[in-house]
Length: 225
Image (cartoon, helix red, strand yellow):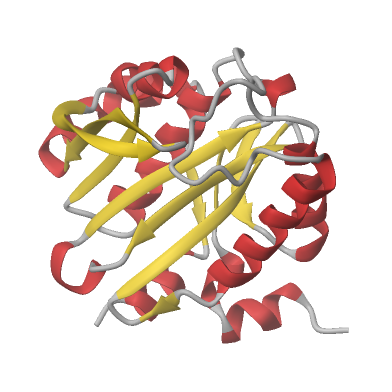
């Protein structure tokens, strides 16, 4: 059977990981993907809420799990010179707890990355969301050389908005976005490279363990024009 090192040689995204202490973000192979799909199927949010722009997390457990499978299988191929989508599984003490995505459709021109994520309900409220965002920013700025990182959330998604503010993003305005047939306020956040440099020491103290990047140089070479 092919070894992961062989896959990473041909497809560098497969070798990407970033970790600090007991938290790791890494490329999602099929074994990890099944675990994450079942985790999503067990619930991400209250049934009456919808934190996402597209309601993929609503439905029967197997339907939600299949949505995760199809989305992740499709996202794997969105890596090329000048643009990429990098989806990473989040593991806390070796247990799959969620997904952290980094999307850069105009990477070759803007060096701008947008983050998006989710956590299984059982793993929410323990500070993991803040730490995984910090690791994503380490990867974006120190690993890939981003000039800015963007994020956003509906105004009623208190947890996501709280993470962006806790990590130190600047408010970047708001706009109205349709959700379930209703216009809802969606807030935007921006982290510049200069802001990241200011906050890096504070983030290091809060993480409490060195940040280790693996496989990033090869991936950066793949997506840099």
